[in-house]
Length: 98
Figure 1 (cartoon, rainbow, N blue to C red):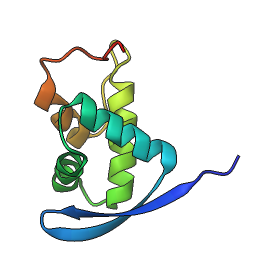
Figure 2: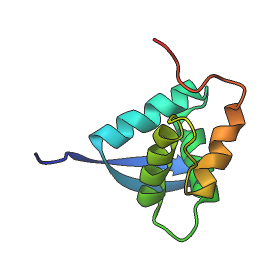
Figure 3: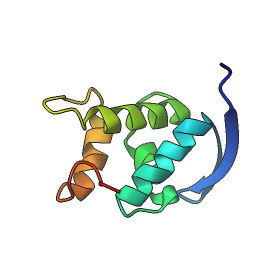
């Protein structure tokens, strides 16, 4: 099974960035942004501003992984940035039941 990489240009903090991610990761980031009542750009800017030394595409993948892993009862995320981002909407339930 071959993954489909999608390259997109986004503007983060006034700078154009080109990000290559798998189609499933892009879908997940959009879903999380909608769930958090944020624009995609705002979520990406938050991830970008809180990442460590990793590439932005890696930081996004780790954020998505941690977001979904945090839905497991008793699970602790491994990366500080996603936990910080998740706390923005801490008052919301863990998953939306659609």
